[in-house]
Length: 208
Image (tube, rainbow, N blue to C red; front, side):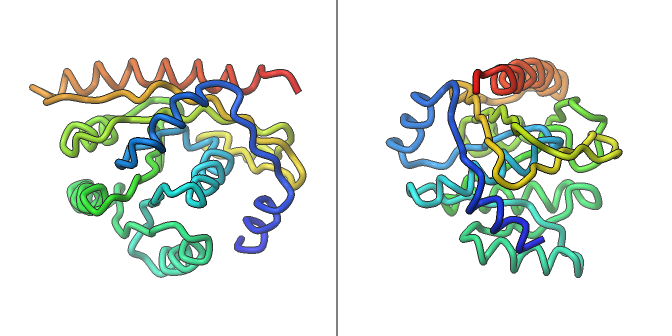
């Protein structure tokens, strides 16, 4: 896995096809954001975020506290991103505490709206709650790979092939104010899901 990530970083080209002005605004501001993508596009969106480390953004990924997670943490360190240890599937409260603490330390934690177990392309409320608690805006990341192998999994996970092109479409930073109840969080999540779908389509349909 470590070798595969290095190969993609060395051979694949990343191109922002929409929303580049939003990224420049975020980088100039210098404060953390909450990037969000679909789990299916974890690899291209994650490598795009990694490319921003060289431009001063401190990127973090939520990684399970399991033994497998320890290996993933070492991979993260090797690629200069911050592992945030916590399991959203076992203890959502523990994960939220870890993510909130990370944002307070200046880390922008990558969130996958439908992860880790789906349903696919159903945006959950975790990222909305995190953005509300921390005051950091959501940054939607639509991503597409020009060539990939598709896994028969719950999200039809896409494994990009070396020497492909990653196309990225970004949404305008989306601040979330105080939430009054879970229904408000769910309504915002539905809007985010629709917007993220549209950004993925923009990325996929961008000309070569």
